[in-house]
Length: 196
Image (cartoon, rainbow, N blue to C red; front, top):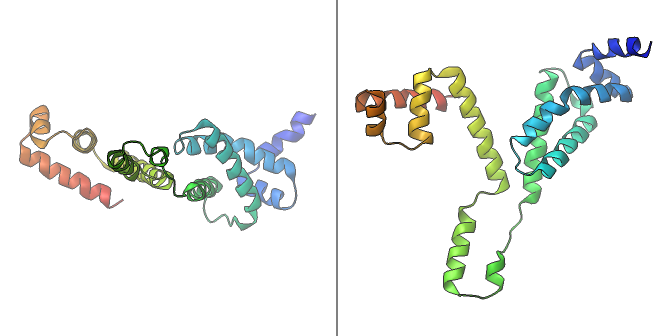
């Protein structure tokens, strides 16, 4: 009999469950949580490197979802709203973590100028967690745009030139095309992707 009473709740839309949560129904939130935990976890996992950070951030996302459910207006699908909360949660975690650091090598003295020069160069070239997150987001957008808007040949050209850094002459030889044809196609590819 309990399974029969649980079944109709599982069939409720996200919007109905949100309304139930706002009215104080704890079970409705549990259902939303079970519907979205896997999706949110995968979303966060793609953007963070550390498993413990992924788990902690996923839980923080759901805390933020719960605390801001009253602001959900159903103007977009609930899934999109949840992933927006996840995106903002990740961004705020990176902003919190950004603070100036001093490499340990500088404190010890060591080899003097050579050590300071190599350390400061390597630290300056490494992206901050926020920059890494924003770069990952942009790459995801480009990959999605490439899959939706480029032909397989254009995708191959983009991969060869921009991801594998192969010279145009090499690509032209591989694809048995003229260098001008490769350049022309790459121009079109960039134009399509930059518009997205």
